[in-house]
Length: 90
Image 1 (cartoon, helix red, strand yellow):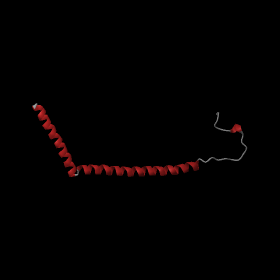
Image 2 (tube, helix red, strand yellow):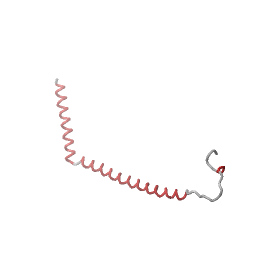
Image 3 (cartoon, one colour):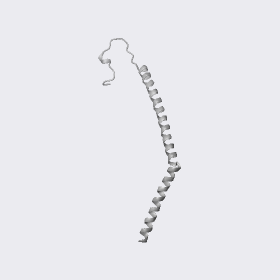
Image 4 (cartoon, one colour):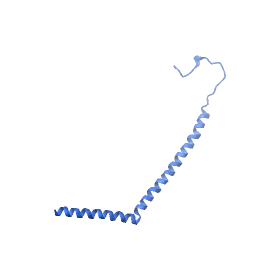
């Protein structure tokens, strides 16, 4: 029975120490500093990702028009026969 009472007192002291420690951290601003650092890091990461994705999109936008301009087919006038068709059954 004494072991149970001692364990209950020790558990109560441990819970009280944890609560006092958390209150001390909140009051001293440690949590605020940690959360501020995390929020600042997330904001900076979001800004960097936006610029990287925007830069990639601009490059792809101009690359599409460059590809379309370079790959335009050249059609020469003349008489074509069906036997000259390329691509199928070769």
